[in-house]
Amino acid sequence: MESHRSLTSLAHARIRDMVLSGELLPGSRIHIDALRKRLEIGASPVREALSILSSEQLVVRNEQRGFWAPNISAEDFGILLDTRCRVEALAFGDAIRQGGPEWEEQIVLLRYRLNALNRTEKAAAWEAAHCDFHRALISACPSTYLLNFCAQLYDLAVRYRNVASLAAYPERQVEDEHSQIAEAALARDAGRAEHLLVDHYRKTGEFLYQQLAEREDTALKAG
Amino acid sequence: MESHRSLTSLAHARIRDMVLSGELLPGSRIHIDALRKRLEIGASPVREALSILSSEQLVVRNEQRGFWAPNISAEDFGILLDTRCRVEALAFGDAIRQGGPEWEEQIVLLRYRLNALNRTEKAAAWEAAHCDFHRALISACPSTYLLNFCAQLYDLAVRYRNVASLAAYPERQVEDEHSQIAEAALARDAGRAEHLLVDHYRKTGEFLYQQLAEREDTALKAG
DNA sequence: CTCAATTAGAAAATCGATTTTTATAGGCCG
DNA sequence: CGGCCTATAAAAATCGATTTTCTAATTGAG
Image (cartoon, rainbow over all chains, first blue to last red; front, side):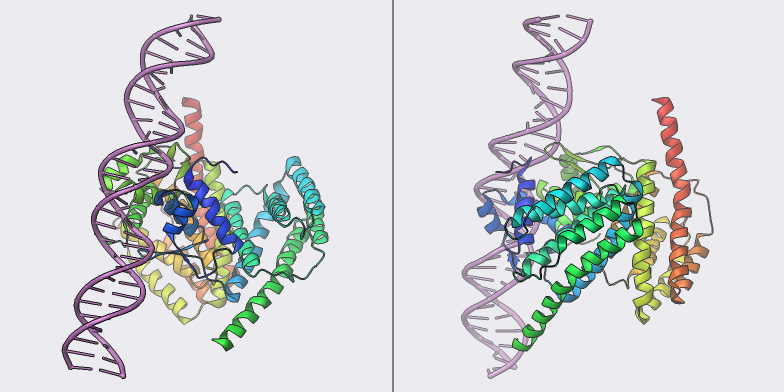
């Protein structure tokens, strides 16, 4: 069991998980009372958590009417992906130019841990290691503003990956891509590293984008 | 009097103003009970507002210990300024490439309104018009993620301007700069427009940075 | 038969009181 | 005399109940 300093932070973590995992389906209503009962806490910490999540764009607030899980669309995902590529490239460039030995060592370590895990067998652990690796790449960027924003965009992207629940995700050699990114970063080749990172995101995103577009297409014909 | 859909949004607006205006001094504690009494509302909406503000980086949360107005420093301001220049350049470029006639017209209109106001005589109105103008410049950027982030960084920058309360702000020809930025945007010259915008920010920020650095210097010698 | 007004039910929003945690000041022991 | 423990006060965090607002179904008029 995770121990949290406050019920608000516990609620935040739990509800965030529900949104990111896709358990709370896009467009579905989030009932405060249901969460209250499920988490066995009062309304205040639930509402505080939802307030925070809504300013993190992970839930949508509709004043006096309640909270919803955000809708998804191919268009929105495309914009998110593009935003992420450009913003993270900025942070990555900073990190490569300013990172010290600890930054380098973290990349080496976390790349090793990531590649040591099997994505399908240890899905949750891989997910966490993947997040850590990507965060480590940009961690030496001095702008906490940029880093926070990158983390937020990361969450939104993870959600898209999960809600689309692509069991038949095309198995590219994602380990190689991660390694190449890490190598370029450690070689302090900002241009190449940024390019590889953006390319990695776009390749990963392309398939998901197609899936979402197809889904909208069939939904349109059906409805 | 402003009418708000909920007491939470009212509290958010009010406390945000207190932080941005510098009324709540950097590093000072924010007492929930004091706000509760002052705004004549309960603890819940105050806490919700503070939760939102803390994820907007306008207040600092310290679990189980309370909320504080964020500290300021020359270093932090420099990073903020730099982040803002680079991120807003991205959004501005998008807007210039994708903006339609309504975007153009808004810029023309809001530039006119801004230049019609006297910065020292109608400070509050100028402030609002300035915000509107800058928002209009980037409004055609399709990424709401980027736009939200820009708005957040704008707020943080405004706060620095206010808390430093530079009565003796050097009077540059800021109207000309705004006009030039608007002209370049309307001419769809993304490169020039971005450059002018960044330059505008850096020039404005430079003096403030010096002030903050000096202040820290004297504080260091005194304390 | 359609549309507007009414009303019962559901849910969010808010409040005031209670509980829990932290900060502080005073006293005690080494 | 200094550091540590204890008691008290202050403040945040949380709860459960109440109030307000929205939603949807029903009814009646045109």
